[in-house]
Image 1 (cartoon, rainbow, N blue to C red):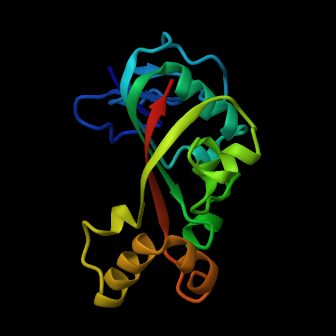
Image 2 (cartoon, one colour):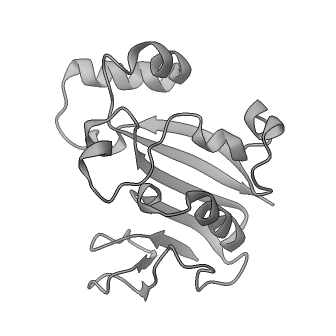
Length: 178
């Protein structure tokens, strides 16, 4: 089963769409701030949360619930506004902001996960992508180069350059570990 949480009117092809509003492409109407989600444990092989997590009252609980629903090895894609982005702060419904290290608290190979055990759920961070949604539009050479640099050296970008040249979004490519 493939699930698109917070799909709105643009559900991904081949996915079951979940949203709190009964729009035409929504298959399951559910408020994602209410737990548990209406899915059995270990039922999903692929999950999308595209611009959802920043709206959640409790993003940690949301990620724990996504983990419950995922099969071992399930692919999880989480798109969020980058904390330095203009777009992160203009939406009055945004409650959280995200940097490159947010999901490393769930990755057992990372020091953050080993040192701070906020939860028992585990995801492997396979990669981080900046400005995914902008790559389908015409962007300038500087923007393309900045994305390449940020993806190759994310810590350097975030700590040394992001305040001067902010990018807009992060997409985390994760794998559920059970």
